[in-house]
Length: 219
Image (tube, rainbow, N blue to C red):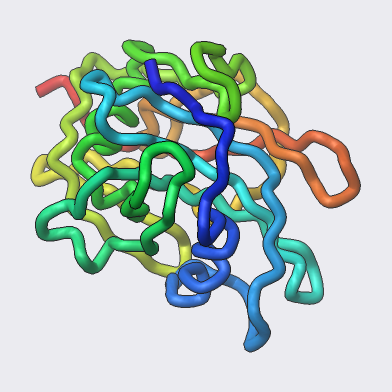
């Protein structure tokens, strides 16, 4: 179980993301600096207790209309070999010391735990409280598994695609859109889904799709 320490971070996560988000192809903002506010998210546990895994939802108010983003991050106590391109930044944690924050789509620990969430082998955890499940994050899976985790990562304007050599694709919706919370009905090759909630700028709760899994998992 991940332990969440009430402490300070310098710079803060939002400050790191303010610098990093405009470099992403799926960022929809304009020429001005993002104006970010935390809107929600959840955590996953690293079975070995070494890596922090957090899916942050932030809303950017810098454009004509607020845009909400899903940002999976991992936090490590030392640099991740070969992942320099995925480094979001470093922070000084008041308890743990220096932490390296990575785009979690390039971290093998997150890439192992996200399929486990879809399959129902692990449960989403509250973003702010240790040992508390997040019941608002739901996962659906109709495949026969196991879901591979040897992903190749591709970012474009439509989000992030995690593709295996066998053609299974996990699409992360980086730009979130509210949608009706309908039961999962496999279509267009979809065999899994993760949905969650976030707070909108007017204070209401929205629900939408975080990730969709497509592919033939029957081997």
